[in-house]
Picture 1 (cartoon, one colour):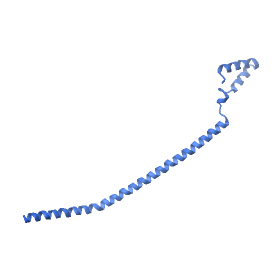
Picture 2 (tube, rainbow, N blue to C red):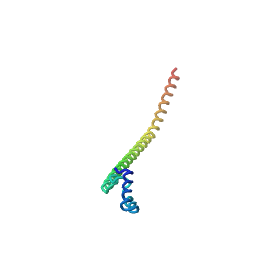
Picture 3 (cartoon, rainbow, N blue to C red):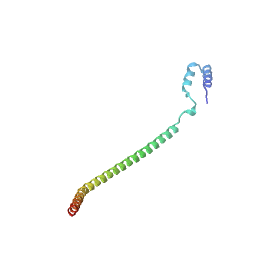
Picture 4 (cartoon, rainbow, N blue to C red):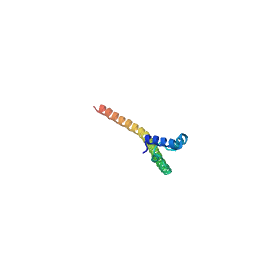
Length: 119
C-alpha cells in the first residue's frame, strides 16, 4: 500500500526530473488510494448482476405477500358469509323459541290453575 510519504517522495522526484507543472498533472492522474481499491468493470458487472438478482427475489417476495393478502381477503369473505348464515339461522329460530316459550308458559299456567281448582 502506498503511503502519503511515498506519494510525497514520488512528487519531489518528479519535480526534480520533469518540473513542477508536469509533476502536478501526473500526480493528479494517480488514484487517491491504491489501484487495488478501485472497482473494475468486472466488479461493477458482478454488482449489477447481484442487484438484478436481489430485485427479482424482492419482486417474488412481494408477489407472495400479495397472494397471501388475497388469501386472507378470501378467508375474511368466507367468515362474513358464515356469520351471515348464522344470523339467518338465529333469525329463523327465535320466533320458534318464542312460540315454544309461550306454549310452555300457558301449559304451566294451566297446570297451576288445575292444581288450584282441585285443591
